[in-house]
Amino acid sequence: MKPTPYGPFPFSPINRRPPYALPGGARVALWVIINVEFFGLDTPMPGDSNERPKPGDHTPMVRHWAQRDYGNRVGIYRMMDLLQKHGIRATVALNSSMCDHHPEVVEDCTKLGWELMGHCRTNTERNTEVPRDQERAMIAGSLDRIAQFSGRRPVGWLGAGLQETWDTVDHLAAEKCIYVADWVNDDQPYTMTTDKGPLVSVPYTYELNDTAAVVRSKQTPVEFERMICDQFDVLYSEGATSGRVMAIALHPYVTGQPHRMVPLARALAHIDRFPGVWKATGEEIARHHLSAMGG
Image (cartoon, rainbow, N blue to C red; front, top):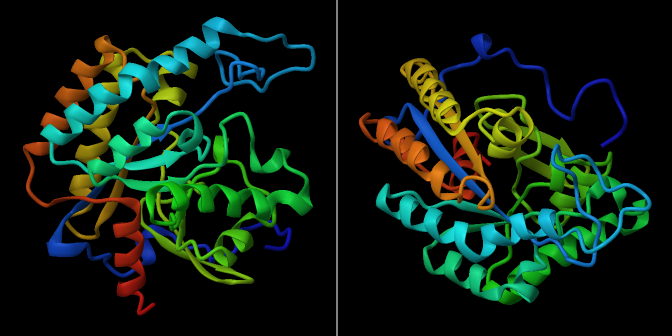
C-alpha cells in the first residue's frame, strides 16, 4: 500500500450501497473475539492506559504482568464456559508465543472449534516497531508457528494495538491471509486492493472492546453491558434492510474477572432473545463476503 490520504479501497457511504445479505437472512453477524496474549515477565510492559513501555522501565513488573497472567490461568476458562452456553465459537486473536509458553490454553481453544487468528508474536511487539525489512518475516513466523502447533494456518490477522505499516496489508495478502481486522471503519465487510491481491476487512471494534471501554475509559461492567445491548439493538434494527457485523472484543484478564462475567452473561442473554443472529467466526464472515462478491 502506497502512502496516500485514503485507504486501499473506495470511500463508500453506507446509505449508497445495495443491501448486504447475510446467510439465512440474518440481520446481524455476531463476531466475538478473544484476545489471548503472551507477556514476558522479563520484558517491560504497557502501562494501565496501554501506554507503551518507556526506556528505563524495570523488570519484573509484577503487578502488571500478574494481572495479565490471571487471564491465561483462570479468566479464559470462565469465558469458554459462558460462550459455550450461548453457542458462540470465538475467534482467538492469538500471540504465537502462546504456543510455546502456554500450549494448554491454545489446545483448549482448538478443542472448542474456535478460530485462531494471527496476532503478532507477543503483545509487547507491534508491526510498527519491527524494522521494515523484518515485518513480513514476523507475520509469516507468527502464522507458521500457529500452523505448526494447531495443524491449520490462520487466514486472518489482527495487529497488536491494531497497528500497521504501509506494507502490512501487502504482506498479509502475500502470506495468503484472506482478512484483516485492524480497520474499524465500517459495520460491514469490504474488499481491500493490495499489491498481492484482495484482502477482506472484517469489522473489528475499538468501541465494544473491554480494554478500551473498561481499562482506558473506566466504564463499569454494567455500563459495558449496556453498551453491548444498545449496540446490538441499533444494528439489529438497521439489519432489517441491510446486514451488519457486530464485534465484541474481550480480553481474559479483563472480562474474565468474576465480577465482569455476570454483566457479560446478561448482555449475551439479551442478544439470544432475537432471531436472525448469525454467530460466526471472522473466517466465516470473510468467506461469505468473498463468495457474495464473486471472489
